Length: 253
Figure 1 (cartoon, rainbow, N blue to C red):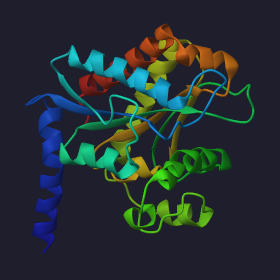
Figure 2: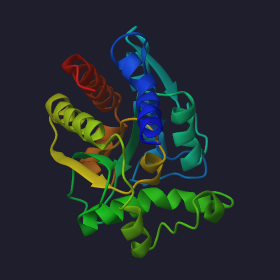
Figure 3: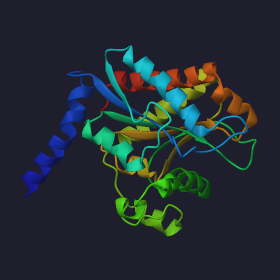
């Protein structure tokens, strides 16, 4: 029984290890947050769903130009995609990395900066409010109670149970998140609010290193203009792209 479990564990990691070691292109699934009937957070000028799509398309173009990578988008237009379908896309393709792009928001309009999340326990009320806002997208899905096994995105108790779920790729996800934050701070000349952990449903269902990037606060007027600009979006995409390159160059699984 023990040998069988070990074999299953090794085989489950094999697709990721073979591509990571250069035997085939590294497959990155890029996930533009929200879309369609789900606008996400709203600024005075822009909607989160539009910014996340624009940045994701720019990131995809950078990845396509490098033969090291293959890239798949969970959406490439203004379409609503359920959270479980986003993760399923990555799982079915045996992707090597899953990167979900989002914009942050806060009632305090002076708050700014990027933060990148891996799956885990939300250790502050601020992290909890972010994850509740992002997970509330499931309320727009038909039959979400069955799909997510009764999970209530507005219940603090539900997140206590959720935080007990183990993520097999947590160390890799945290390592990638750190590189993304470092590059975002370097390339965009904006504040990094650091690497954090929280119970995002879209990360919970993935079976590869996965991160959710809150690329800035759409609620901050100055940062909203930056996020909506072509130059800002290109800088953000370039930072995430370079972080992936740096991760792979480090040679750490």
